[in-house]
Image (cartoon, rainbow, N blue to C red; front, top):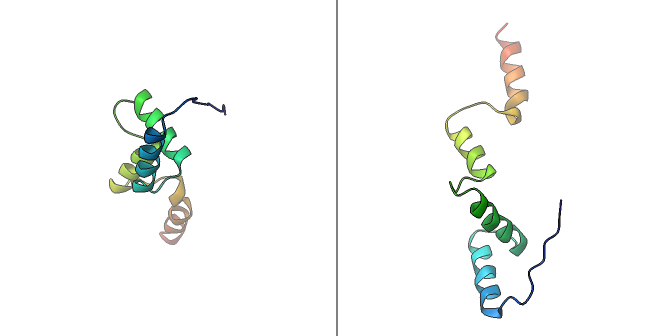
Length: 76
């Protein structure tokens, strides 16, 4: 991981970023990272978005492994 620093940010912009972070239930750092991810991945899909969509589609993921093993065991 690398730390980044932005200097001389106007206070009005900082206030807007903090407000946006609160709206998204994130820390300021989390909001800044989300903005950077959106800039790099213009589809707007974050890892969290993809994970949510996979769950909505009913695709089983590693988080479901215990339930999958139990279902397989009980089916025998």
